[in-house]
Image (cartoon, rainbow, N blue to C red):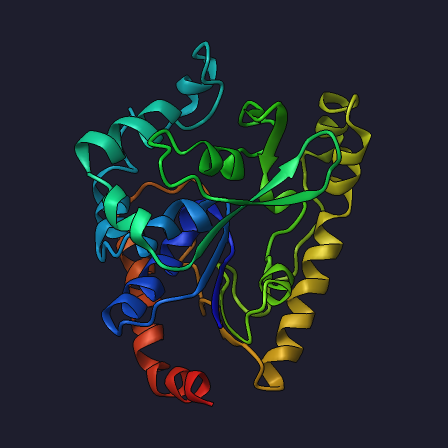
Length: 282
């Protein structure tokens, strides 16, 4: 069973979009797709088979003032750097149509990773393919301090990356014997403790398990990356990592920079095509 695992990283995940579009072009379709934060937010366009949709989103929408900006954090009911009803509502339903029928027909599993604020643990939610407001995606992308908590079935959730930034273990647990893991940081990246951890400790003090997950996030992330490198060296997984992110920040909106990063991902996958196909055929 083929699994695809997509790390988040905000605008840096445009690299992953290039890789995913190449996979679509080669008709490499996962049986199990799992993504975190922007990894699932962009990943659903792979699952709907809409090659090029993410590139259009990145180069024509993400720099718009109605898409993101500090002013949206002061809007009642939004409280996020991103204008959520525009990003998850108007864009996919009206301006850049998302193919809900194709998404619903995707034969594999589609999993969104979220962090339960009460328990501090990761939860792996099958994406609701009838939900045109994308609540599971909103929850997976909800960065602490920069997003409101997203309530689903009576529980409150935030960014899946807090508890499980690279959910390859969950993909293995689900039965995947082939894994394509797409990371959004260069291979030698080492994660440091979050600069805002002290503020987060105060803000989420009523949820100590969630605070502990934030405190240990960097160490757990680095451990996961080391495990993935070992699995790669043993030929058990196929890993894509950008050689550089071209200084693209998490909230980057510059179309030229994003196009360059997308092209990097596409060309990387194109260059590695033979090796990837050899891996999948073994």
